[in-house]
Image (cartoon, rainbow, N blue to C red; front, side, top):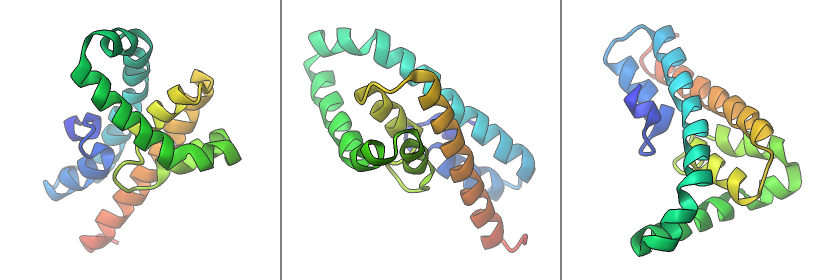
Length: 144
């Protein structure tokens, strides 16, 4: 669960970790998806309430936040402008580093997307991405 909450791997790391520890595969999938979905409301709260304050008062934070925002914007701009919320889902569902719920939440914040629709798009993308990683890990272990 902690790996799935972490920005250093999200469910893309939590699922293989849980499966390689021989935990119940269904429980691993469900817990990883739920934990990863929880990131969106936590990040949204942070961005809406603390981000502005930290940008004004913490120079180290401002530099880091701008760098992260530029990466999220660069990686998602084309998909979001062309496909909207479907593009956000597609961006989040790609099981590669830098395309998960953290980047998806930041992109939704930067592009001022509706929070409820962005949450649904992120949740769907997370679910699809997690199922891809789960299936690939089980396939790699010879379970299928």
